[in-house]
Length: 125
Figure (cartoon, rainbow, N blue to C red):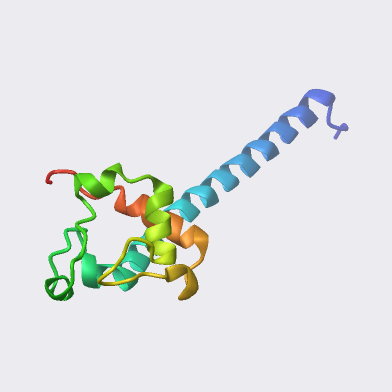
């Protein structure tokens, strides 16, 4: 059997690179899907009891406090930085102050929550 020629080596290198790219793409997709599940769970644990699963603010807790409808035009018009300040540091909350940055959540988690609430239906207010 003869030694592989240059063309054979190049093909093997290209195939190896293709496998690496496919492997990386697979794990990137899996990571993204896991991230979506994680932020959904985080919202359910930290936010849904007041803001409801759909962001409407129609909950028993909301009946006792003034809770924002996260789907509202007012919320949609806020910048991510304003929403971050409200969620992370409790700014603009009077009846139920948030301070999630000081209660165990990280900045990336709070930013992910903001992206998540941006996905709520815009079919009202």
